[in-house]
Amino acid sequence: MDTLSYKTQSARKETVSYSWFVVDAEGQPLGRLASKIATVLRGKHKPCYTPHVDCGDYVIVLNAEKVLLTGNKLTQKVHYTHSGYPGGQKQRTPAQILEKHPNRLIEMAVKGMLPKNKLGNAMYKKLFVYEGSEHCHQAQKPSKLEIK
View (cartoon, rainbow, N blue to C red):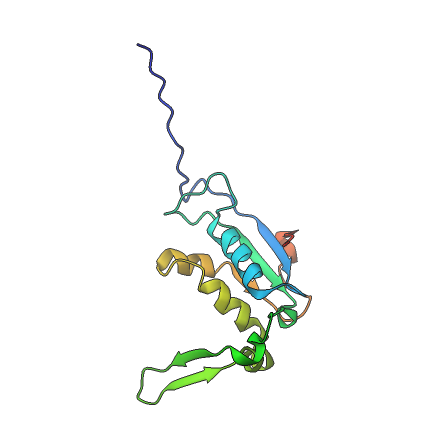
């Protein structure tokens, strides 16, 4: 009896190669944009994806202030934070967040879609969100990532 044994190749930290991508957030729905970015940060778009290894790529997001929120989410949705002290709960709408820190809305959406552990923190550090259409990562030669 001739048995063939094929072994699945698991990615290791030393064997993973990283790429850089640029995403334009202008006119993109926030949830769809965030889920695509989270997929690229996790590395699920690669054939060598391994759940316990950070094999995702770097993502640069431009025009964060022009992201699209459908329906009445801009004024009716509420984001809560708590300082840990009594009476330390704060609530803000996406309109208030966009007014003060436009890049935080995308960062919060993407971070919520990543694993809640040290590996997720490492993936989140590969996300760079900018307000305008300029970024300082030209030396990495990022390629454009199309979001449909």
